Length: 206
Ligand SMILES: CC(C)(COP(=O)(O)OP(=O)(O)OC[C@H]1O[C@@H](n2cnc3c(N)ncnc32)[C@H](O)[C@@H]1OP(=O)(O)O)[C@@H](O)C(=O)NCCC(=O)NCCS
Image 1 (cartoon, protein in one colour):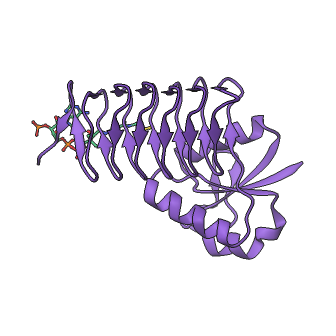
Image 2 (tube, rainbow, N blue to C red):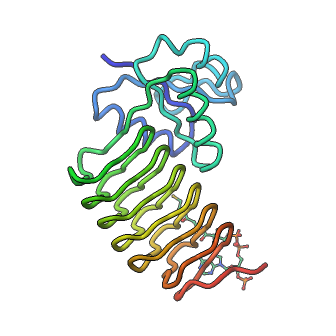
């Protein structure tokens, strides 16, 4: 059986692990909380990031299952530099167009849909039942949360997070490091580094 090392023993990691198993991988975890943490449900946590780098040749693939977009992307880049194989994990119930491109280290969860000519760059999360319509571009390290919907030709900048149940109108540009709050309706472009909430979505000022 193919051996997969998952970095990040969290709730997100559990979902990733099951999708990996459904794709024929045998899973073990690494986490920087090791040795304080040695297990996650029935899976073993056998080391930290440094241990994984030492043992890289023991695995057929590595996957970074860390929710924080910046950390996930940085860890994935480091593993890629060291020559790790970084698979794409797609739940069997997800629908990914043959004309879409999903890059290394992305996970596409149950019931998600990615339509033709969408581009999902490395280390993205397309969470449960999210939809990414035709010609969308997700830059590296983006997270589209459960049941969020992107209409056609939306672009989302690096490390941005679209919250649960949010909707984005077609052809809009969401910048990098943006947070779109849960349930928001995005109807205008959003500049980098902003948090927006509400219907229609407005910048959150605290
Ligand atoms: C937008 C978000 C990141 C803001 O979090 P925060 O910075 O901790 O903000 P707070 O909870 O302190 O709220 C600040 C204000 O914004 C409002 N607010 C927060 N999130 C909101 C949302 N999604 N929609 C509308 N208003 C929101 C709060 O009611 C509060 O208003 P007030 O100042 O009038 O009381 C967060 O609320 C959110 O929506 N996260 C997405 C969660 C998600 O998608 N999880 C899925 C994980 S897979």
